Length: 344
Ligand code: CP
Image 1 (cartoon, helix red, strand yellow):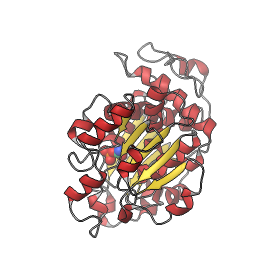
Image 2 (cartoon, helix red, strand yellow):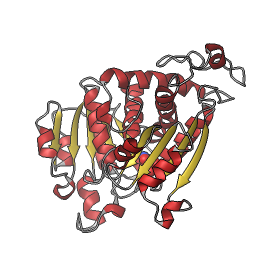
Image 3 (cartoon, helix red, strand yellow):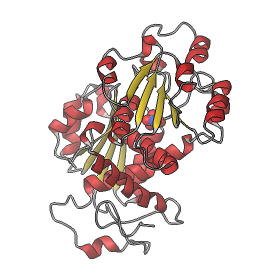
């Protein structure tokens, strides 16, 4: 694996499966009373969020802390970005402090790729504009695999504001990497213009008609609803919220029809949810919803990502003994994929 995590497209099937296998071991840690291993002791991870976040920022912070890294959170407000410092100067300033990883969320698509050109530390894309959100796609794959098993041939439907969604872009890549079939559904105004080229690839389809997809011949294994990103909309992409819900919302009626056809269907949403707009409360809180499983998986997957990028990536490799004994008595991961100390 490269030393950065910038795009889902950078990960081969083997690398995705390796990260998810590590995440499974890390998930076990969440069930322990003392959630701490020394794996990243002495490493420093900066979470720099130029855009708001609840799930991604807190899960990266928890992931770093549980692995004994020193984690520091920065946001645009309160940093010298508010005084006009450029992204390049900001990134190089942080890098000069000899940090090991920079986790970045930024409103500009491609910002993380640019930063990776300027710094020596690992860069992790925590969401860049409307481009990508690779760790979200990994945690979604983890959640799906924990319920559905191997995703080869599984049918996942992604619905909503595709135009502004980095979650959709990374998910299509990762799901295809794992062999899933993906149908994306959006109103014509929220269907990205370049998507026609994607439609040519095997196992990928687009539609403007949600009901036709849900009631179609191809049974649905999982539906991922996307947030309507009103903060990124400058014009009217749909006439009214009510009309959006009628055409593209996961309503109680649509949930009932999905469950009638497949009682094991899964409902996902990356959050934050606009309840009553793209997803009804009955669907968000239903027994088929795995929204909170996604949040839980987020910590394990981000631990796994930090582990794969930082553990063992040492100029002066640590002694194995140092990796094996934690301050709490729990032993720690010593090699990628199957960390010894946290394995089931
Ligand atoms: N899914 C997601 O990225 O959520 P946050 O914006 O809360 O991090």
